[in-house]
Image (cartoon, rainbow, N blue to C red):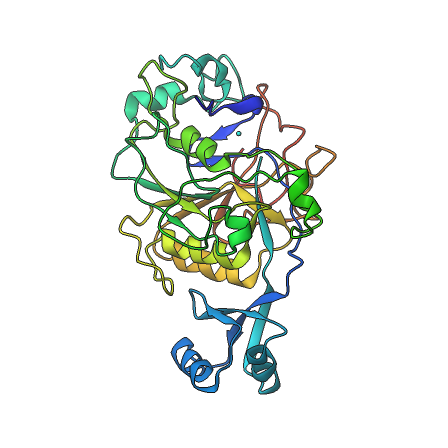
Length: 356
């Protein structure tokens, strides 16, 4: 049985909907960019134009934006005509490495604060509420695995990984948010199909770990205790092998909130909270901020991990080395503390951190 705590069970989990484990990221090396077109050029008219003139290479995204290859005829034509008013690289996003339940004594981060100053002191909170099954948390991550501790908690989700190579499930976007694994073997690397910064690794099962920390069945004499005992999870898969792409992330954010995404059925269970235990190094991009602005305007809470430094395993100052989406406007950025209550040595810090 999968252990939600994993090898790093000593790190802090955030009660609202976030767990921090590790972060690495670079901008994707691919040619596609996300563009916004000038006033008067709607997705419908642009799509009609592409069809009538046989221009290809562009994919409609949510928020009236387009994913387009810079070498395509459509991009060259729109650029020459001055239609492109903003463009953003299709950045690569990565996972942030996560009662009477038998492993509860290992979850110091939930235990009483008189035992550990750095704990979230959940036991008094559970005397007031153990969560509400009408509250829905969308976990945008690597997807989810079937697990007895989550069976009663999981609602239908969606798979937004559009690149079949990254998806690792035989196709692109579809209605199955199951995590097929994100392992990369030495043989995979030898094919030359993966980016140079895509490391040889075993599967992380990151989305399942995060979902378990948030909402694993609790007080059932099994496994761990979830932070909330009744909250439901909508798994939204946006990351696969070697991470995920910005275009898939912004569509996943909007869909999680119940907003429309081209060629994707609407989410029948819009989230009240969106959890993003994922990220990349860099400033918040225009497409990310626009999507977050739209969902927070609906009253949805967006929570993101601020990350755990770089390869040196020492936390970085977000004011000089920002991590997104945690530092986007309107996002609750979550850092980590040690048992003593002091900032964890590996946790990023700075003005982008809202809660420790």
